[in-house]
Structure formats: C-alpha cells, structure tokens
Length: 278
Image (cartoon, rainbow, N blue to C red; front, side):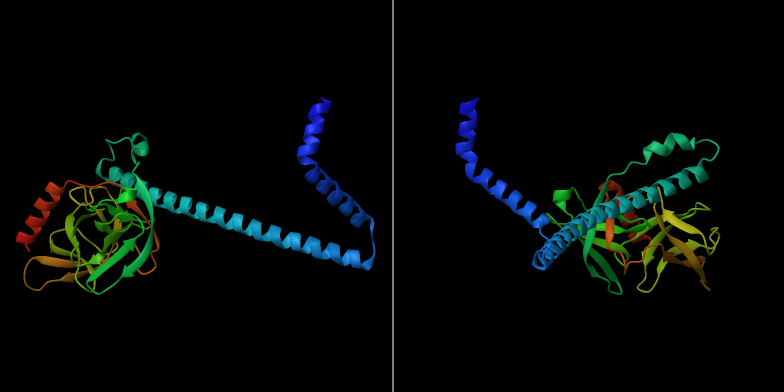
C-alpha cells in the first residue's frame, strides 16, 4: 500500500502540489475582503458568467437547429399523410378502413437545403445540397410541408438540380381532389395551368389540385395548388384552368426529397403520348 502511494506521489506530485496551491489561494481569496480582491472576484465571476453564457447559447442554437429540422420533417410527413388519407377517404369512403392505412404512409424523406435558385420566367430550378451520396436519383419528387415543389432532374455526387412546377419542361398528371377529373399541369411562362381541360369536366374555383395516381412521375397524392380561374375558350371545347400553387417558390429554403422513383418505361410512354397529342 505504502509503495503504491509512494509511486503515485512520485508520478503526480507536481499536479498534486499545483492543485493544493490553487485551492489554498482560492480559500484565502474568499476570506479576503479588501477592495482590490473584491474587484478581482467581480472580474473573475463576470468572465466565468460570460463564457458560460456563450457556451449555453451555442448549445441552444444547435438544439434549435435539430428541433427545426425535426419539425420540418414532421410537417412534410403530415402533409403526405393528410393528402393520402383525403385520397382514400374520397375514393373509397365506404370500403377503406382509414385506420388500416395509417401506418402505410411511410415514405423515405431525404432532408435538403436549397443552395441556389434560378427563377427565370420559363426555366425555374433549384439546386440542393444532396446528391448520389445521399441516395438521390433523377425523377424523385421534392416537397415541403406545403406541397409539391418539383422533380429532381439531374444529380452529381453531392448536389442535385430540381425542376420546379414553374418550369416549361415539366408536365405532371394531376387530379381534381373533389371531382376526380384528371388533367395535365404545366407552366405557360406566366401561370401554372391545367391544359386541354374539356368543358364537360367538373372543375370550379377553389378546388384542390393534387398529383394523380395515373402519373408516371408522381404517383402518390401530393398537394399542388388550388383552382383560381377558368379561362373560357371561344372556339373549341377546352378550358385553360389557372392554378395557384401551395408552395412559395421564392421563399422556399428547406425541402425534402421523396425517395421514390416511378418507372422510366411508363414515364417515357406517357411523355411520348402527350407530345403526340399537343
């Protein structure tokens, strides 16, 4: 026992003496009430409080960032759940047990941040800080808690380009949530519109527009926007229906990539069909 104590003393005597001296100095300082020592105490405690405050703020900021991302994720998940549940409720109100579908709304959501925007009149796009290394692929939908933002067009190792709904090159099959009428959504350079809508279709201002299960690009129900105006075409049998998107593309910063890709074969077939019938 004595040998062990002796070895410890030999190995750590400098540190032990230093700790004893520091503790002795602190005891004497605490018992000293001269003005100079009081000022020293005030400065020491003030410095300690400032450092503690900075550390506390840094920890709180980190916690807030983590909590904000969790809330954004929950918001996006709730948006998907609400749209899917609304879809089931409208199409199969008497046949579908809603509780049975509650646990099926589990889509992989890849968090991303918008690092740059190109919001031109005809080719609106976003650049995200996720790519191949994050399992992002072309064709994946991009959403936030408000609704559909666009579709991933191209990817690199760490970045991806998204064509937003306000891009002339992006056409999506959508559905009137109330009447179940399907149509093609596109950007005409000024407005988001449903094109070649027969006048016999039941579409009214205020109707919610969602992505259609017929779509080969986004086959899950995601909110797109609301009908604001029906433009009557004097000649012909079609309407042009204006849509106000749910998403504010100018302000969007934090998004989620929905980790699903529809069949390329279906996609090519659908695109060729719509090109032939324009």
